[in-house]
Figure 1 (cartoon, rainbow, N blue to C red):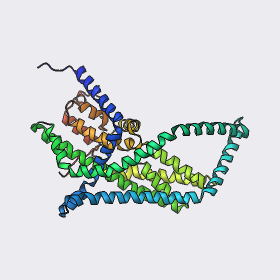
Figure 2 (figure 1 turned 180 degrees about the vertical axis):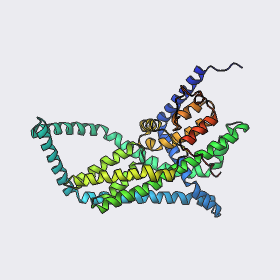
Figure 3 (figure 1 turned 60 degrees about the vertical axis):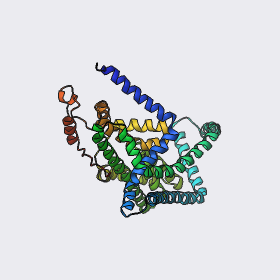
Figure 4 (figure 1 turned 30 degrees about the horizontal axis):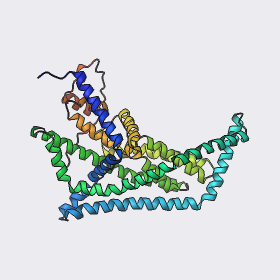
Length: 383
């Protein structure tokens, strides 16, 4: 049989990726809740297995972890509602502080430019009018987004329950897609994917906890108002890779400015967040999540942006675990192995232009690069 030319293979690969992206864009309202539910199911699997070992009925072994998850989400919702209540109670003082900061900013602009206070007010009025018109135009869409969010959140526990209930059926479906001689590789991919997803998502839950405690606790010690709210918001926004930390810093600054007449608390907030991020990035998170599969920064940023374009915040949050699973699959496929290399962090110390061995798909070369880049092999997950 005549071999398919390399250019045709690459064209088919690119076409397949394009069609996959188009499918995600067109069906994201259906697909994203399913993907989110799948990842949550992976996180709840250890609890499910624990209750099954204790001879709980299958129904209860699934229901109890879901109820625990909903309790945690409810507590987070209660925390935010109580904090927002405190902010509403402080609204007159917040309004006064905001006016003071705006007056200082206006004076500074007046000193360094030719814009008078009158011209600045005129500019603000014009922009406010445009903003109101824009807000009115998207008001109908906002109501639709809220209803979609409620549907999304309502479907999640149902999907999680059904995925855990039909776990064995879904696994059988996957194995039936492949020939018997490929089942060992499929089992390896499934085991590694489960291990990576659990490690990543449970690590994120631990990260939320200690970042909330560290940021909120340190800011409380410095006497910063709304310290706990800033800590929890930053920890949650930090779930969105790269982009979330920046948004968290901006929100922290805005909350501090609105509750203080001085700029010193703003510097304290920024320094505290920077210190906690340093601890998180260099000491805590590497020890918690480990380095079993690493995605290079370029692939991660592009993946986050694509995930955001496809499905907003949920797409940005799910982008890294999805890319990690894709890399595991690509690394086990002879056809898609170059894509696994492109996403990975196994950066060669030499140029493939000089070292010809680095041009091959050899597993020995890959293992050597993993050792050089301190990437640990992934243990198989429990079946």
